[in-house]
Image 1 (tube, one colour):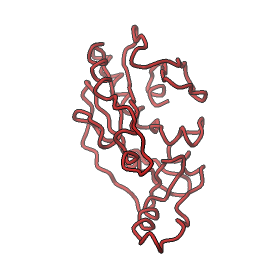
Image 2: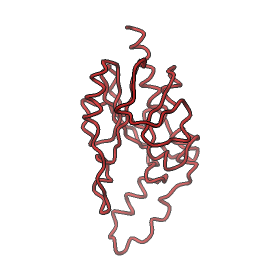
Image 3: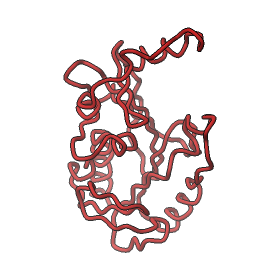
Image 4: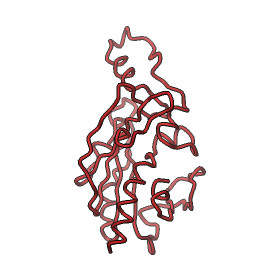
Length: 210
């Protein structure tokens, strides 16, 4: 959606069906799908191999596709962006956060969502997080009060009880992310459109300069 707002015609490719995807969509393997005729490629390889899920007791193996994706993109010779989470093997990535863009819910919870972007196109940098005391995290198909959750799980496991107040209304999560066309599970895996609109406008300028 962010790239669309920046001025791109967007085509999505994913190996799984995405019934809520709002643009042209192809259910296919993104690493083998023909990319002829495109101007820019944005890739979001699965993040589970790098995120906190890899430390969970019930963890399972997840694909590590960043290097393979980068190799494919470099072979195309097109401008590209690779997005992922902290810990992913990205090269000199730019980090974006909801606090850069003033993203928050109507009940005052600021979005804390760090995402990292590698590109072969130079992007502006120099941002610093400016989190408010009330922050919302969107993960595990839930919207969560991050500060309250951290305080709760810092307590002794035997005595801390239920995490009362940690889970926030779903509407707060949708508002903070700036997304209203998908379900909570999909929202947990999404990038706020503000991030990709900001990146997309710089890509438009780059393409124009060429």
